Length: 186
Image (cartoon, rainbow, N blue to C red; front, side, top):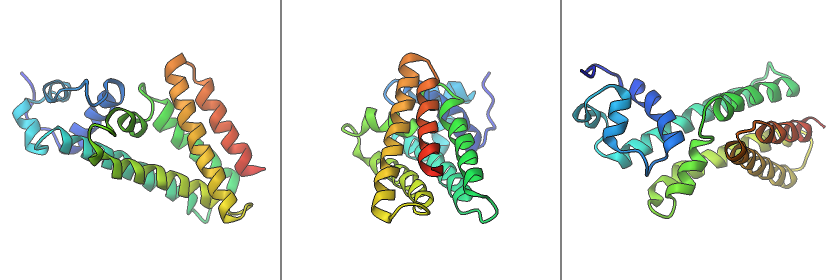
């Protein structure tokens, strides 16, 4: 019998990996509830519908990434090489440690034309990712060049994540992160 007491945070922590690997369209509310070990009716206690759930998942992932990224970037006690090393660890935790790649990019590709309501959260995630990298680059480059390089880095990282999934080979994301490191530190 499924357990009944589960916090919203516990539900999200179980739903996020499933959505990352299966996608939004291939994950029913029944399957998600089952993966959480709760009844479907209890699942609806937290989320009125699938759209609300997906928005909450995206918000949770975005908040986690934004908080941790800017905690590193804004740290006065870390040198630039230390910041880059911590960013690499953060990206490894988010993008390499789990199957399915980047939930933001996956959800964007899968739903942007079907349900544009997710677009704002996804766009905010990528905007802040770019802004964070741009802030580090502005120590060596003017603002426009820093922005262009930051956009290239995010594109490269996301492409690396995609190819890592396609070929089941971490070299693609590792190479993208190494290129990011070289541009920031050189």
